[in-house]
Image (cartoon, rainbow, N blue to C red; front, side):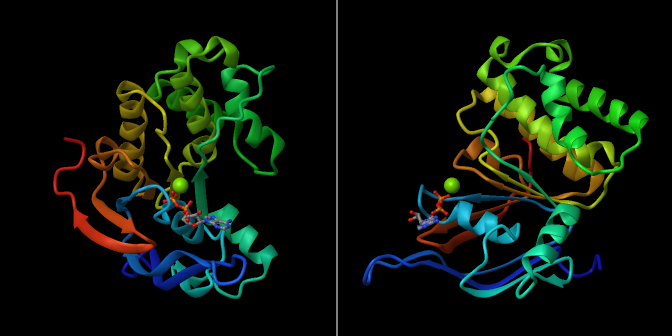
Length: 244
Ligand SMILES: Nc1ncnc2c1ncn2[C@@H]1O[C@H](COP(=O)(O)OP(=O)(O)O)[C@@H](O)[C@H]1O
Ligand SMILES: [Mg+2]
């Protein structure tokens, strides 16, 4: 399946119905192919459709028109149950909101989704994955701190670690990971720690990564920059020297 693109979007439209004639075309005719292992950023002004497009790629929002294929599987017409199962297995999403639990330490917060979930995962691998992820996100000496003793940047890094731990500890390769403004409201030092980790995940594990951002400093880490305007692709450029 590696010779077909990881993601194929064909003529995607998402129309939100308003009162009378006030419909909003959040995405208005987007076709896009994302090869396996590519780190792609989606840029554009607020309201240009970035989040909607990311959610459509992740199967979290159904397009009004057009088709979405992930790794050769067409998401259109899948039942909700099937789609949920497909998403859990094939797509990782890094949401922006921290929502850390104040009565749990940093590492307990990171472990929570796994401990609360159904995933069968080897305890040794999990511990090793956790340790390495904490190290890469420079959280090792913060692991036993509670959220209110962490800076905003550290809290956001904990939230990122929480979103990535399952994938990380599973030694997954070639996953599809989506992130909506993962460095939103962070200073450049914190943003760089996160971008570096995402870049490493692409390079070492051949993950395909799609990141929505309005920050050129984040896009600079990616292989390709797609810019949206009014729900359509305004430009689509390769970035030949990511991370420099
Ligand atoms: N659930 C929704 N209902 C109605 N309109 C929406 C909804 N989600 C997004 N929109 C509208 O679609 C447009 C694109 O939104 P969005 O994808 O969030 O843009 P971005 O992430 O680039 O800021 C905006 O005009 C927004 O108001
Ligand atoms: Mg958005």
